[in-house]
Amino acid sequence: MQTQTDLLAFFESVLASRAETKALDWLSPQTEKINADASLTKFFLAFSQASRFFKKDNLNLSETEKETSGSLVSGFDPSHWDVLQTARTYLLLKFAPGKEAWLKAINQLFETGDMHEQQALYAALPVMPYPDDLLTRAIDGCRTNMTLIFDAIALNNPYPSAHFPEANWNQLVLKSIFMQRPIYRIQQLDERRNQALAEIASDFAHERWAAGRPVMPELWRLVVPFLNEHLLEDLKKVVFSEDQLECEAGVLAAYQSGFAPAKDLLKSFPETVSAIEYGEISWEKIGKDFQDKKA
Image 1: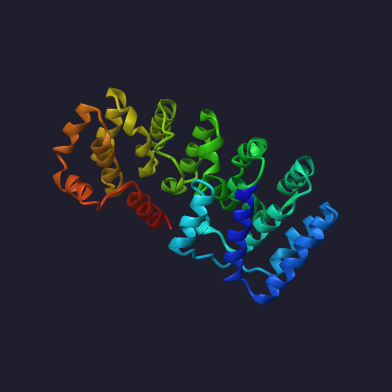
Image 2: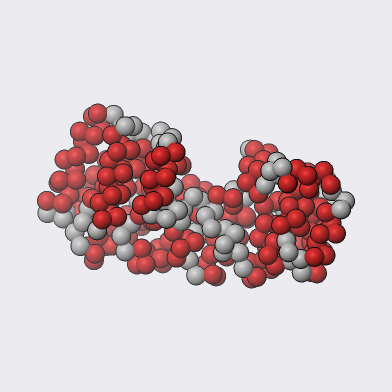
């Protein structure tokens, strides 16, 4: 498969410019060993031992490299990967014993791998062969409460938006909010907004308010296309919040909405509207500011 060949060439190039010589000298013969007799044992050993040779330094991809990765697989963005993740992904793509044996090996790794090994596996879902066969595994992975692993699935990963059914997609987004993860990094978030998710988000906000707890401001991004009289009442509460980010989020949601009554709210916030129009307030900016505030 040409895409697989191109992906391997991309990873080879990335590793060649970032990994130490001794690591590259180790990697090359490993790929020969694991394919010589399609040995699961040798593959598992190489996948585990990669941590001895490759560091967890961020790849710091260039703009050209980012464009290349996205052209190989739509939405693929390994900008947040480290060198070790990349080496492990290279190994699992080099391992080619046939579909049944490959899936058996990968599923075993998912079940037995340590935290960083699972992080690499989930982040690599968009470039793995047989993506449809890995859907159940990906959905199961979203049940984790380990942020490192959950982020590998939910953030900067095109696999969920491309493969998750609506119910599972909504669960992923809601859990991201519950865990207070930066949902601006969920790919295709706007495109996959839906009525059910907007209502779930509103219910979640009401639960938080009832418990006297704040609501993550990015949540209101989910209701924008579905604003109605009921959801507008939520926004009226949000725009007059004493928390600046909540207020900005409420105004931004009203600004982006096509619901005419929501536009009346904007009259009370001319300065915020002006900042939105000048690009000084965006969902990404709100998300980043919230994460900085939470840190």
